[in-house]
Length: 202
Image (cartoon, rainbow, N blue to C red; front, side, top):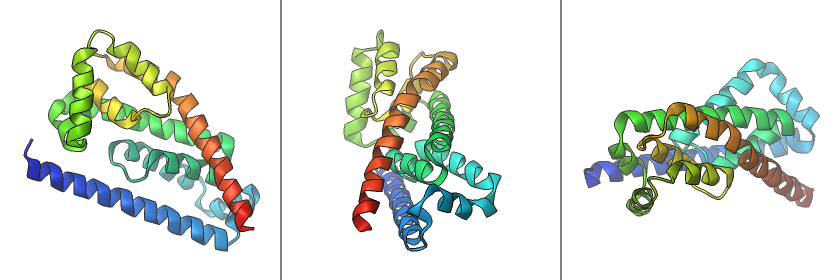
């Protein structure tokens, strides 16, 4: 991989993440000042004019952010819960993240290790390619265990799985079964922190 191309790509990805994060902060500041965050009813009233499109756009953003880091995953989960409530927020997060994870897997199947080298830092690439080489036979089980744990770099692991012999059917089953726990922990745990912060702000 040409180091210059990789560096340019990394810069673009950092810019996308920064823009997404700044946009989220601006939204929360606006929503806080407008009183939208005072209750779930206020948020629902705000979203009412957007109808079905609000949920669809959010699901698509969550899917895209797995492949292109528009937002840190945890931030997206919190936004979903704040906007749609704990249950619908979880559902939309789940659908979007699963869609994005499957897309990442398929892209890696198509483009192979050069894609991983492009999207990952050299340190991350070497670390996980070395880990993959040492654990080829047990990769499926280790991957499933990692997906269940919300501390693993899930998005990159989905790309990594795409360069193995894992089939789409098995990958999809692992994602569908493994993602709910991590999403619940992110969504509800960080939403509690968010509500605490709002309480401190009065």
